[in-house]
Amino acid sequence: MIKVLNKALLISTSLMLASSMVNAQWTGPKEKPTQQVQLKYGPITPAHRTDANMEAFRNYGLGQFIHWGVYAIPGNEWEGVSARKGAPASEWIRVWGGPTAPKDWKNTYDNLYKQFAAKDFDAKKWAKQAKAMGAKYMIFTTKHHDGFALWPTKYSEYNITKSPYGKDIVKEVVDAYTAEGIDVYLYFSVQEWNNPDDIDKKPVTSEEIAKNDRFLKYTRNQLLELLKNYPKMKGFWFDGTWDRGWISEPEFTYNLEKEMREIHPGLIIGSRFRNDENGARHFDTNGKLLGDYEQGWERKMPQQFEWLDGNDWDAVMTIPPNGWGYMKDWSGLYTKTTDDIIDMLMHSVSMNGNFVLNFGPDGDGNMHPGEDKIAKELGEWMKVNEEAVYGVRHADFPLSKLGYYTQKGENLYLTVMNRPVNNIVRITVPKNAKEVPVAAEILGNKKALVVKHSDVGLDKDNNTYYDILLPEQFKSKRAFVIKMKLGAPRSKTDKLMDAKM
Ligand code: FHN
Image (cartoon, rainbow, N blue to C red; front, side, top):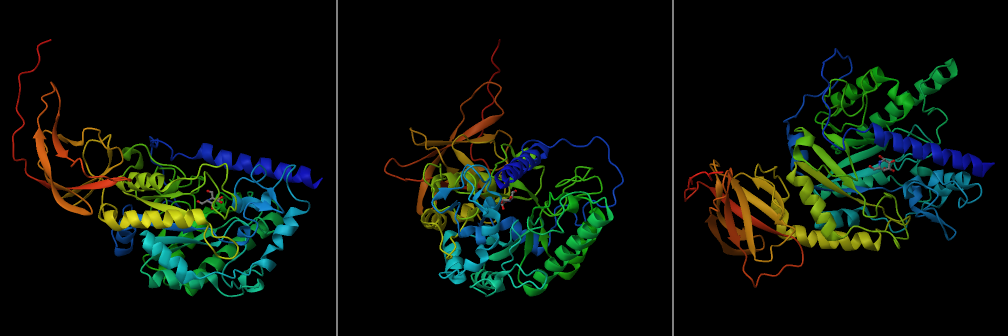
């Protein structure tokens, strides 16, 4: 019977995930509504906030996500049996169903907090590692879908004070990262699997209405508590807001967003917090972004800059294909390499987004050795190349097959992912450009590179070309960055006779 129920839950969970993917509009160009309607619960903050907090968000470039909670104890397996085929992700292990699920698993899971001793947890060590990796902000799971709060909340018994660890983990994280100059954002799942008041449906009966009301009140209390307890935090990273009870209360969530912003001026909230009165999420019925940045780029990358429609955004990424919480066993899975991560980081920043790399520490508080390796290698790369990552913007140059452009004022950066075999890095520049590459060097190697105007003379071509010559003896095992100085063109692009056809 339990197995049947587990299976049903797993199927409904997968359907829910699948349907949220189908409804998602962020995987391609967004269709703009043809008409604008009057809305009561549209955006609260102006599009493209320009205050200091939002400017800081725009300049982060690289962030760290940490998923930590009682799901770290099993690490996607239990008593030698893997949950890989039975749970959608390691931090979703509570919903493990099907033939491999342990007997009475949910009950076992709900008692795991009694083993959460976190004996090696050292927030300062995590923060130092994040700093060395080059992260400028971090997002920390205060409470995931299982409902276990890592702070001593007054509003639920299911919290860290009941575990053997006992101390306020959220405070330790906020303090340690802030001390390292890394801004902290609090991840908060609205949906709670083990909360009987979370009905995950539009309430209809008086009992459902009472439950949902209690659940909304409880969520508000916890959020205001987090704001009060951790005033150094910069924003919330919401999740689980696909909850149908939550979606059914747009007036409540609208007022709550206003209230939180009043309590914590400058607060940054992404597009996952709430929906409008028609249930539109991320973007309201008029196509306007709900929140300060687009928060739908989870394990995905925009192919075209235009898809982003000028919005701020972040991409959050796992190292294994999926699985945000600790996964003991990475064998048989493709785990992203440091080169993959550098590629996605530069892809993101070249399109005005931040890239956030996820870490899932084990139940003792240690990062996975694979995460340690990537953090170290990425940090080494960032040390040399950070100038092409922090505070940069999309560069309005034709795309290069060789890598990603970023720009800061008169400096244009090309992160070379694909080195040409002839060592000639060709930069395509519109013929009418007022600014073209006039000098170049490789970051980490101050020697000036030769820059030549190569007016190839292709008929009907709107572009001209600048060639940067890489020294043959220059070797690099990873992507490298060419920093170019932009200036007025020093040579003319010849107007040739059009080819007669
Ligand atoms: O269901 C969660 C998942 O476990 C994880 O926390 C990710 C992180 O972005 N968010 C949800 C899925 O969108």
